[in-house]
Length: 54
Image (cartoon, rainbow, N blue to C red; front, side, top):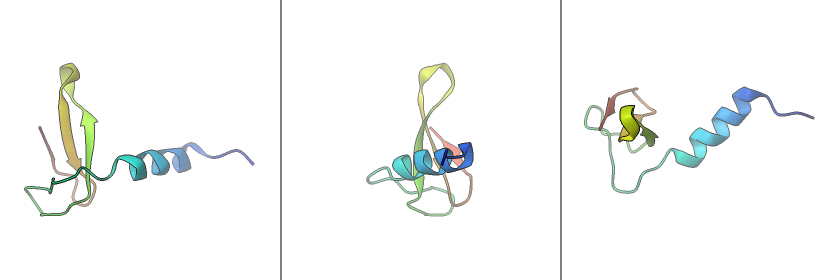
């Protein structure tokens, strides 16, 4: 049975949804994903509240 793209996104988020020692400066959650930002820089996004920072 083929996996839907929604399921694939969930797997990818689950694999990246933890950055050691990082917590969201807005809500304090440790559910932080590391993402590529503009111009190849590294940014972070809180998967609990949606706050992003670099």
